[in-house]
Length: 214
Image 1 (cartoon, rainbow, N blue to C red):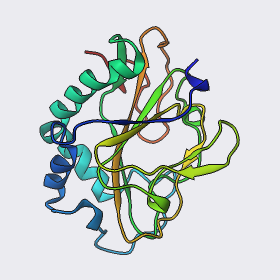
Image 2 (cartoon, rainbow, N blue to C red):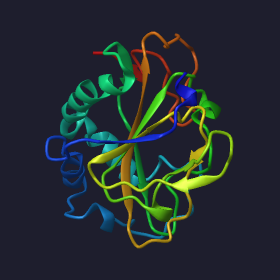
Image 3 (tube, one colour):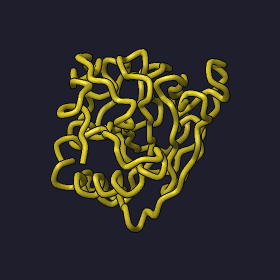
């Protein structure tokens, strides 16, 4: 079962799949790690961690700037990880931005707490160097609640069972903003139709809304 597998780091060619350049074009910056809000921002919570102007810009510009690149990556990369080319994938990835002095997600959690189903696999892909308190923290062993920071460079991603493994982040005490996105896939053999929705945007967790297939 996927739930028994340890989180694993993979690599991809960031020159071929240059997500960072596409996202830099959205914010008109040469350095994503230097992004900062224009005004002081309250500590984000699970209710507000998708509500900043940076999130709005990413989702607004996803279709023209990132959709084809993203789908090309999913189509070429995911089958080797899942062991099948019959899977569904998150139609629009979830954007994260982790400013100094703030968090990117509002609480430590398992995705299963937010209506996600067993069998979903999470792909977490940073667009800036991620380390220490600007990164995602995942349990060292499932159920232990003993967390370790994920350390990744651009061109690497973490694949793990976010439904069953606790994870989250801490207040960023580095001077570097972490920018990332994550997406979920599930083998069609493991997919079960559901009428549940995401707790933030209310997206239906079924093929045709939250999920898509090629």
